[in-house]
Length: 264
Image 1 (cartoon, helix red, strand yellow):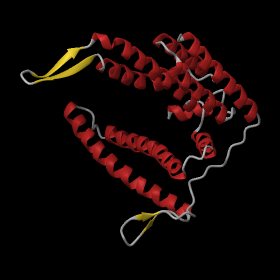
Image 2 (cartoon, rainbow, N blue to C red):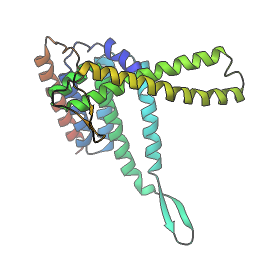
Image 3 (tube, one colour):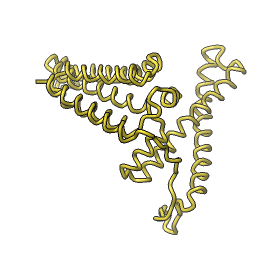
Image 4 (cartoon, rainbow, N blue to C red):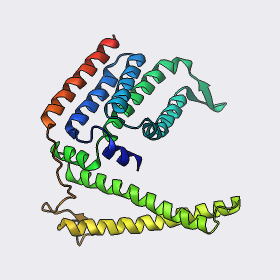
C-alpha cells in the first residue's frame, strides 16, 4: 500500500516516532490555535512542506493519498452552504446560506491542517513504530490489537480483490457492460466470503499465539483473562530518540506560537 511504502522509504525512517508524533501534535494544536482561516491554511502549508521537503516524501505519492480525503473535505464543506427548512406547507426546502461562509472557511482550513498533521505522522512512521509509541503512552492493549488486525485486513481485502478481478478478467468477465455488472456482483459476494474466512483464520491464529485469548463462557459471553497476551512487535531502537524528541517539541511549540501570533 502507498502509506506503508512511504513509511519505510522516507528520509525520517530512523527518527524516533515520539518526535514525529510530538511535532504532528503541535501542528494539530496550532490548527485550532490559529484565529483566522488564513493562518490555519498557513499551518497546513508548513506541515505539507515539512513532509515533502523534510521527510522527502514523494509529491506524487502524497497527492494520491491526500486527494481522496481532500475531495471528501470539499464535498462536506459545500454541504454546509445549504440549510434545510421544514415548512408545514412546502415541506422540505433547500436554502442557500451565504452567512455560513466564515464558518465553512474555518472548518475547512482546520480540517485541512489536521489532515496535513495526520499525513505527516502516518507517511513517515511504520505501524510497528506507532504501536510501540502508543504502548508507551499506556493505550489499552485491546485497542492496539484491534488496530493491528484492522490494518492487516486492509492487505487481505486488497489481495483478495486483486486475485478475483484478475481471474474474472482472464475469463472476459468485463468484456461488455452486462458482463461487467454481473462480474461486479460476483466480486462483492466472493469478497465477503473470502474476507470472512481469512479474518476467522487470522483471529484463530492470533488467539493461538496469545496463549490466553477470549474464552467462551457458559453464559455465551466472551471473557478475557488478565494473563492473556497481546499482539507484539519487536521494539525498535532509535539512537537519537531524546535529541529528536526535544527538537520536535521545540519546533511544535514554535509552530503553535507562530499560529497564535498570526491569528491575532
